[in-house]
Every structure is written in structure tokens, then in C-alpha cells.
Length: 217
Image (tube, rainbow, N blue to C red; front, side, top):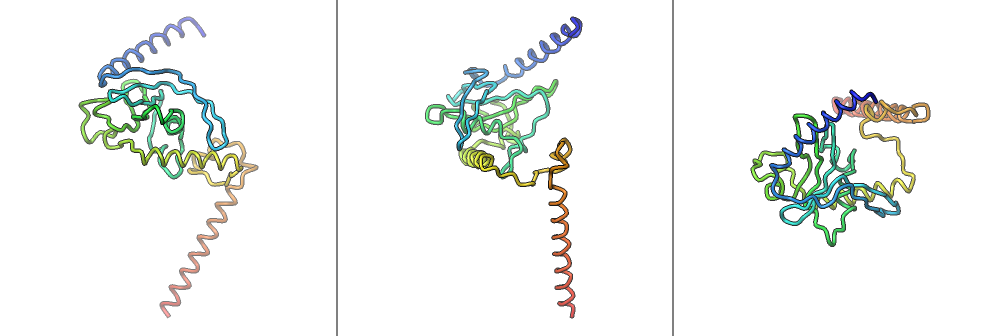
């Protein structure tokens, strides 16, 4: 890269990191326990080599798993029963030693310039992250619970089992997104599936019409 470009990139990154550190300085006291943490996880017959961006030790001694993001993040991607993004739930549910390490939360560190924020779920955000947060804050309202963690674990384990079993139904969560960037249209049966579903809907509609006509008679 040209030297001038590298200089500008250095200035941009220095400004970005400085502003992020100023944002984190407003947090409740914490300790950065580890960065670039490597863990090997054995999951329902799969072996996964993971690398966690960062793990903090919080005020109450629990751990906060952090993943840096330079773009837009959405917690809707964690929603069950079909999460689109399981990276952080996977880290939180399987990369920590649950017997020795108590999980306090999992968050994205969203580093969009001018829009710095933590997005995720924490057990006690006011005690462990930002003391002055209002009850209307998304972090306060979306409290991390053991029930949520168990649900994620069950879902991820089932995904691993399905993968090993070769389960691959043509059933994308959002075809508009999944099919847009796919290069396997000539091999995929999704259009056939949609045509079949439309035929079934039409057939059900005809049946309903028949019943309605019978009632009128």
C-alpha cells in the first residue's frame, strides 16, 4: 500500500481506539482477563477450535465474553428457534469451564465511529457494566438468564448433530438473503419447494371454498 494511505489508516485507527478506550473508561471497574483466547471444544461429535476476542472479569467475579465488531450488529440474530448467528452463544455456552468460570454476560463491542456501544445480554448490567443505565436500556431489559443459556446450548448441540447426520433440508430462514449470494441455483431445489408450497396453499384455499359453498347451501 502507498505510504500516504498507511499513514491515514494509522491516524484513523488511533482515533477510533482512543475514542473506544474513553468509552470503556466510563464502565464499572473491571479487569481484562484474557485476549485472543484459544479454546478447543468437543460438541456432539464435532471438534471446534475457537478464538475469543476478549474476556473480562467483572465486579462480581463473573466473566464477560466480548467480540469486536466494526459494523452493524443485531441481537435478533440470536433468537431461537433458528438463530442466524451462534458465535457468541457458542463461546458463552461451551468455551468456558462452567464448573470454574461463572458467565456474567456476552456482548458485541460495536465500534462504529460515533456510535460506540455494547450490545448483548448481561446478568447484572448495572452492577457490572454501567452503573447509571436506565431501566429502559436494552441492556437492562435483555437480562441474561440460565434458561436462555440452556436454550442456546440445546440449540447449538442439535445443530451439530444435524450437521453430522447430513441433515440439509432446502429451508433457508430468509430466502431473500440466503439465495441472493448463492452460486448453486442450478443444483438447488428451493424453487421446486416454493412451487409445491404454493400449490398446497392453493389446494387448501379450494377446500375452504368448497366448505364455504356447502355451508351456504
